[in-house]
Length: 226
Image: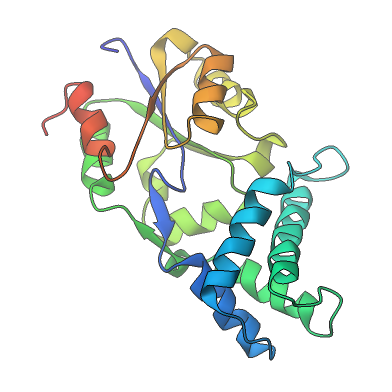
């Protein structure tokens, strides 16, 4: 670990999180179009949709299109679970509003320790990149949250048309810096996606388990001043 020169970070769950519960956001947007649904129903429907619809269909077009269509299906399956007809008038506009909501920095919150830890890593001379299963909205989100400048590179699954646990995101980042796996480390919050990608790429991983462990815990492990 002392030889690590390149730090790769996941985004959602590692650096940032939704500023308010997803179910509350969905309820508010559905309500605007005349569909009143309880948050608990939406929470269960979203969880089912997010984990159950498989991966975006990369290869048929630009990665962003595949990601957008994937999210369209997530919203549609969530709506189905709440008894909302995905073919109803206004549903396409409702999806567009929801998709746009999460493109803004205001929809997200930075975990409390993140800015200080990243600043200290920068002082220590680490190269840093984001490698996230997110579409290109993440670039705007990080800019508006004031985090983009902390990184030398931001890569999303839409940028490379592949999602973790595929190693492509990590390999693309390492190639960008001409950095071997032995000098690279990934910090994420998912044992399957992040841990799997790191294993496939031959990179060591630190998997956060908030609130028990966070970036400050990781900083302590690499000898930072925390």
